[in-house]
Amino acid sequence: MTRDQYYELGRLGHFDGKRVELIHGEVVEAGPISWPHSLCVSLVSDAFRLAFAGSFFVDIHQPFPVPRAALASEPEPDVAVIPGEPRDYTDHPTVAALLVEVSDATLFYDTTTKAELYATANVPEYWVLDLEHRQLIVFRDPQPLPFPPDLAATAYRTRLTFLPTDRVSPLAAPNASILVNDLLP
Image 1 (spheres, rainbow, N blue to C red):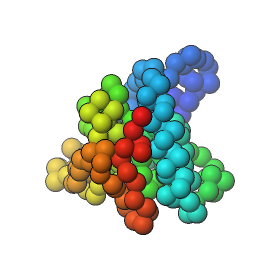
Image 2 (image 1 turned 180 degrees about the vertical axis):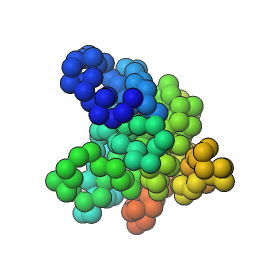
Image 3 (image 1 turned 135 degrees about the vertical axis):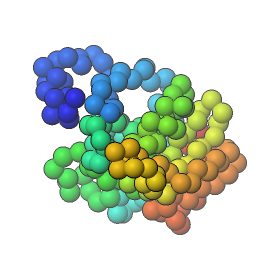
Image 4 (image 1 turned 90 degrees about the vertical axis):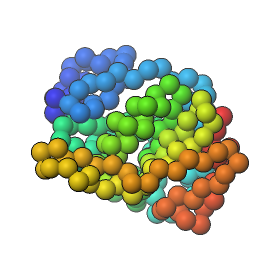
């Protein structure tokens, strides 16, 4: 399915009452959002508004089209740090300094499928807050994999894990030092 077809189905009411994303040309239904998940999104967005004040804005649960994906994909990251101001864009942004997924039941999906999509979009940094294990997984340095062109894929070369007592500085805000525990519910 293309992005235009996806939006047309939405306009016709096919997704009414459902939370969905377009992933690799398929409509994927998202599960319910638990309170710990919601709280974590609020904590992250509050921390990011402070860390990225000035040159970026923080978006929550908004579509993020992946322009270089082989099949149409428009995931909805929990939190996005976008360059500039919202009015700088005439459509959903396709660039981000940092994307975050909060994982309370989707860790494998978030660290595989979503990581590959965000690397393909050349997002320099992607964070997964793993609520079950109370840790932050940070992906950095998206690079094309050495596959033949018909099997093109992109992945993050660096994967770091931070515990609640650790501090992390986003690449686009190197002077900010965020305590992981401050992001966890």
